[in-house]
Image (cartoon, rainbow, N blue to C red; front, side):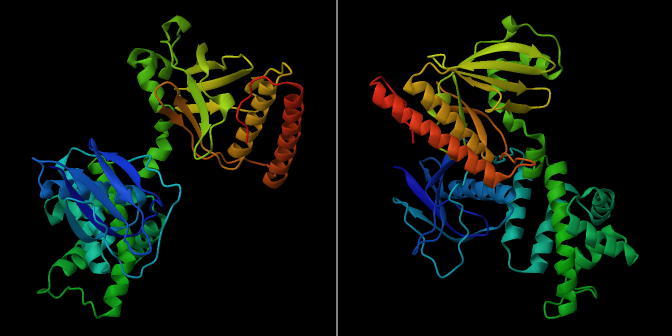
Length: 427
């Protein structure tokens, strides 16, 4: 008989406003939104022989990974469970919500040290005490290096590689005071916090102590994050964004390793070597589907300089779109203005396709995120970051596109009156 485990949360990240299912380590976890009476929570349904302790360990690893990605605390306020996924009540607290919440990246390291580091990172972020936060982040350094001598040497070797500007500002201040940074953080931070017998201790009532440690905290946090990523191999959201491998991630498996390697190295490649591709759909994240760009036949038409160009055509051949897969640069390339041709045969459908293109362009210029899907299996193959127009008057552009859309709508209605043929759904 299945059991439910529920963890109520005090959150410091933006949380979904509807129940959201996320897969982690092959298991499905339910994120439940906050209500007027209930706290936000995560829920996991498990069956024997899994024990409650194992289920809780899994949920905590998930929360640690999510904390790492979102950059805010996820503090447990209650753990409960049983035969039903009961809610967790709450007291008055602020709400951080995101109606468009979506998990695009969630690390699931198999290495036990990396898992422990994520757990310590989540614990440290969730603490209300600055001194204990400092110690929590320092323990991550201790995972990688056993004794104080090695820890101090590692800090001095890595501290200049940090990118957090506030941490670097504190680093400069400490060096201007003549401090050996590794020794300072170890003696005046870690040891002073962990021990109460020596002369060098942190007095929680002393404003000078707490102010100094608060100034050091950002530097310690940055060092801990560096260790998690570069020592333990858990990529940060910033690294994921810089690598932008998600733009073509799904196409890698479709093409196969040999073809992909040739494209990435810009080797000559014939179109006959390209495997057949599924039908594709071009969409904008969180927008209604644009029917004209759904279920397109995709055919490779060029492969050169690391780029594969696909010709995507509708079944009625009224829409012809070019889609660029730049594997050398790991970029998804699509231009709905100059890279899409719509052939007007005088029908209502061709006019509706023109309207769909206008709406897609309009959404894209409003920081839309382009997505390409496998239409047959409903699998996301690639996505872009939000589009940011440059040197564009957005208000005037949107007004102009709305005028064009109104004119196309009027033409659609005129054609509808003159013909009773099939049409696409148009909003």
